[in-house]
Length: 106
Length: 122
Image (cartoon, each protein chain N blue to C red):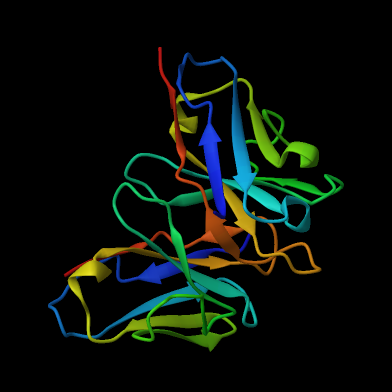
């Protein structure tokens, strides 16, 4: 199974700051990586797929980059609504695996 | 409206069984692999199972293989998860999730239901 490791586990930042969350895979994924945002009590929401493609309706403050085993999610000009847990997910092979999550507090 | 609505979650005793359902609407159900993903209280996301559009390809997580069975009814745009021999560690919110409809068998998860809670406890 492909192991996904996110860092950091938690973050506390201020409105207007920027943040970068890292996701590392135990083997090369090419570009087959997605990012999700989950707010408390809600279902996850797709943010980015194919490592850097923004999902429909996602603000341009969100961006993704990387390939192979190293990926990043960057959020610029943080807003209070960005408070959430963020997960990376590989879709190179079954079983589908997720990172453990990064909790972001604004 | 494009949506997935799960139902069937409840409190069940260890060793018991439960069947979850998911009703899809607003999109072509037959064009997508469908999935179950779960989340234990306060924990991260765990993929459970995937089923192809014609039910000819089915994949399970090791943690549920042999106990859970995923199925679908394309005529009624419904997805199911039959859960047997339930354990305390199966306690989770179970999400019905659509996979993007490409020609392959594995893509990102682009539409999530609101989830249904399964609690396994005596």
